[in-house]
Image 1 (spheres, rainbow, N blue to C red):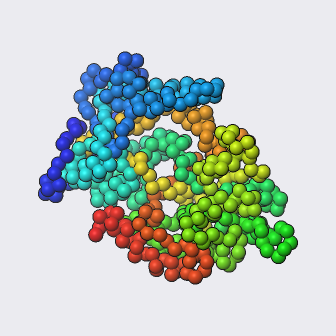
Image 2 (spheres, helix red, strand yellow):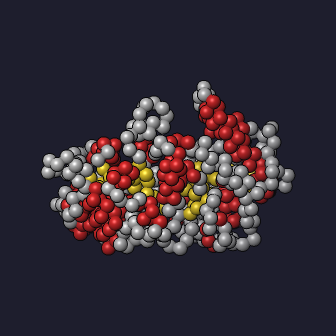
Image 3 (cartoon, rainbow, N blue to C red):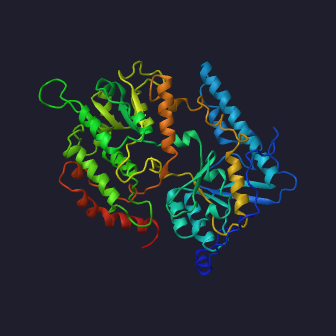
Length: 499
């Protein structure tokens, strides 16, 4: 598994790709690497006979190059953080403990697997070129590649990424508890794209459905989180709640309180996923599927048939702000939100800079299940991510290679206590609520959303969908599908190199 110079494109085109995978015989990660790593530096273990090269497109810390913890970029950056308060000192001590364990883990991996391993920064274009030349030629430059979706999905579609299910045992963590690693389910029964699991990764980029607790209580509506647990939180029940909450509270003949408000792309994406649907998560568009049609129709009906939504802002360029932050006025029952949205104005004064909090409490709940959806299988987060991994076709010992990466992520000997410690994730808790119980509950919803991830490229096709016409009623769902289906397919063809 030596690093090889990238082959020329002409040579790659002339050679035949070998897709044979070496299965069985490799080591299964125990989560308990042999203790190692001395303060003076990570030196290769006696008997080391293999090199594992991880092709990346940005500088990474912790590998066999490391001479000391001070070589690690993340630790160097962490030392620049303020330490004026006792809490900041505690955070920095906690951070050093984590980074020390990560560094010590390098030597443990070397000893356990008899390898040295290296991050090779090829740059973004370099990673793409390496995959498209050396892997296609059957002699990959690297044993693992750090990729984004734009590189990972074409690699899978063209048979350049190995299926983990062909060489890992069926009871491996990545297929069961997913404590340290998970994989992207592309709906083809394979596991070719994988990524590390942490609580912070899971809660990031999640868009749960939020609700004004006091508003629901004032209207004697059962907590939707309870309905979810009972399997009764559906689109129909959600609509019923929105109809109750939409009211003329001052008696002037005009509604001034609404069941729902949300930015159209945020809302549609979540309705689509809650109905078990997607638009661009395979090589063929599914915008025209019946399940997507149901999501489009329900979205339109909320505004035009049931009239339970805060009037949509059709002003060009401002809807994403006005519709995302209207909830702060206290006149909206339900709304899509995210941690970064609630942090934007310091809704619950997470850093003490605002001095006040919203006069009502917000709770997170999972999106209601649509008529074609399934509570147990619906995706809850669309993460077109930039930190994915593939093992290229042609690697000689894929199980050993994977186990090295897996052990790299399991840097605390099977424990996630430090990795997911609340002290280290303090921001993620504090931005969503002012009470600890509600912070914990909201964090749990975000984490569960992040554990049910899909990769749908529907917003990465290079054009804008006309949600204004859908929501103002001038375009039917069928017309919406017909208008954009070819553009979606053209975008997919370009993405996967099919044209």
